[in-house]
Image 1 (cartoon, rainbow, N blue to C red):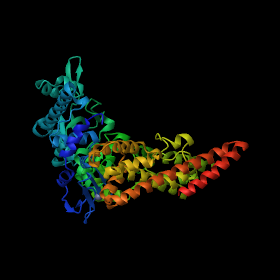
Image 2: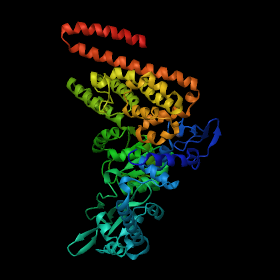
Image 3: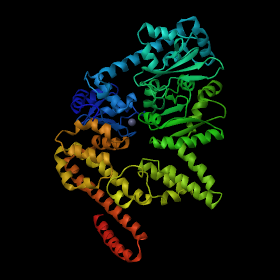
Image 4: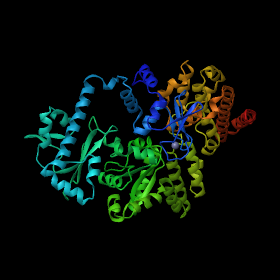
Length: 586
Ligand SMILES: [Zn+2]
């Protein structure tokens, strides 16, 4: 909570009543202690979306979406946690000072936004209202982009004169700022416009404000595109073109389609695929996927159907996995980009390609399985590549499914033998440091229940302040492996505040997956009865204890294999007694 003051977040939480906040978008009906409605994140006819005002959580038992008021804003507006805090603060009139946004820095940022806005309006004016825009209007017609679509995306035209925008900025005292964000550049004979004779695509932030621009020539001159370089307002790797326009559709469809170019995104939008965004001309980045991943787990990327496109899809897989997404590939007929495909074959053709899209990881496994069939060496190399790739899968459940699939395809040996599980890259306290990570097979059998137990103990602590001391006394905390959950549990147990007051901490600190599990528990019936909740504490503590024993047994078994004979006898004795103990704990 370094960035925003704790008391300010608390004030915000009190004003931003979760039922009122969600009720503004979803029709909610009281049902017992919860409010029920139709889920805004997937389409359904009978309500499975619940809001619990007392605990400050929502959860959809249909699609699994869930979390706090902050998560709801992050999801519906497609913004990060700090951005959600700012949005809520503005909406409820709470002033939230931020260290890096105070004083002169804030004033400078505001004037940069102002300069970008001036530029955007200037370009739009030239496109629609002047003679020099005629060629660009003609070009849009040729590319079959309607005036409505062009207006929706705020398109404009930069005239060919060397300093038209520069003059407009000068008149408003914004020329210095224009230089800073790359709208104009200093030449030997004065300040010149960066974009000249180009169709302009504004790139907007999550609130729809222009922060950068892309410009395309109207003919075949090179470079075809120039784009704003990174500035204090804008980072190419961390923005997605069209997200502001696509956000609602992405939430409704629970799906996003990533294309490369501006015009492809607009063409798809225009053809009814309003969940389309563009990666700003390059291959999609981890940061861009993380941003999309906050809006939906289903992200589809377009690739050429030829062999270069297939290789590109395999290169994209680790980027998706790194962002916590599996990702699907839409394979286009060779030589057709989405824009041309739609113009030549219609929206139906694109729809059919979406329907036949394939999980990137499935495609990858099929390719590796094919390569493994050749020779023993080929098989070993393929198995190693599969193991390396699957290590990037961060979700335990997905990891297990994929490992199983790899094994069925005959390229899973390395995955099984591999010493690091999916969590191998994270820093893990306790047992793992002492014994090294457990084998994947053992981990698969052991951890699902234990992860559930960690989240559940946090849920009990949030729901029942009076049971917190019992959780602490039970000693389960020593057996936690997820640091974020453990830290939050310590924070909660060290306080007498009601669980609802930890909403911001939950949204800021926990992973997406853990927040969903938490909201399911806190909104569902399991935690309604304090007697049941108390009994659960003991069950969960026991599950964590069992995991610790298993880890110790595994660790000893492993070192026993490496120890020399004399030691081995002693270790074997240890192992036997540990196994016995573990059996009793089960
Ligand atoms: Zn849902």
